[in-house]
Each structure stands twice: as structure tokens, then as C-alpha cells.
Length: 187
Image (tube, rainbow, N blue to C red; front, side, top):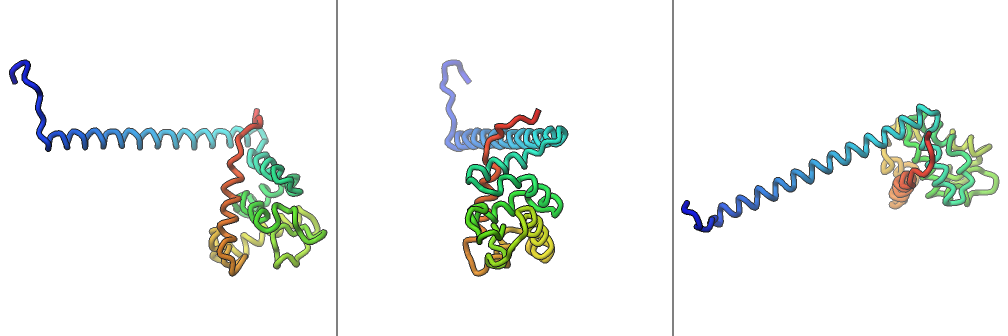
């Protein structure tokens, strides 16, 4: 090509070049997103590991602070929620989320019932908050999850029929429990 001659591209060549640039940009964006997600997962795992090594479980503090935002009497039992969830293989947020839907986290319950979960349509009486957390956690595992209802949507069909919104409300609170910033020390 002689010097001073403009470089001309055909329409087809130009389309191919634009396509290559778009694909390259998309691949870089995906790669950056994967790296970010991996770093976030590693950071979360690192915080959890560090906290457990130091005898501090971030879930307890996270749940306690969440429940305190609602002035919940259950905030003092965050450790029990986590312990009974772990003992039964549950997500630690499940039982507190149910209490959010059923009683605004234990604030509106039948007098002296400790029934923050709408258990037996609210007619059941527990002997204490700890008793209620233990009973609901164990029963969710044995009578719901182990019997073919491993998701909130499937639990909802058995726990709160015929409600079409109960499961989504529980999912909402489950998702909100882990949205608080980590503003406590693990050192």
C-alpha cells in the first residue's frame, strides 16, 4: 500500500472488527466479574473462618443486630437461633424470618405463649423463647425438610396454606438478615 493512501475497510471487515471488539470487551467484563465474585467469596469465607477461629460467630452478632433494629425480644436469643439451626442443618436465618412474618419478630404474640411463629395457628404455647426456637427448628427439619420440603416455597405449602405470599415474605426477611454491614470487630 503506497504511503499516504488512506486505510479503507470494507463494511464486512468493519463489522468483523466491531464484533471482535465487543466480544473482547464482554469477555473482559465477565472475567472481571468472576474475579470480583471469587474475591468476595474468599473475603466472606475468610471473615467467617477468622471469626470462628477466635470463638466469634459473625452470624450471631449479625442476627442480634438485625433483630434489635425491630426491637425484638428475640434479639437476646440470636445464639440459640444459630445453635439450633446448626444442630438441625438449617439456614440460621429461616426461623427468625418466619417469626418476622408471623409476629413482627416476636413482638405480637398470644400472651405468655412465646409463639412467634404462628405455630398451630397461634394456639400453641411454648415454655420459653429457647424452647420455641428449639421446637420449631427441630420440627422444620424432621417434619418439613426431611419429608420433602427442602425449600421455603415447599415449606410454605405445608406451613401456611393457602397463603400465596407467606413464602415470599419469609424469603424477603431471610435476604434482609445478611444485609447489615459488618461493623463489629472479630479480632
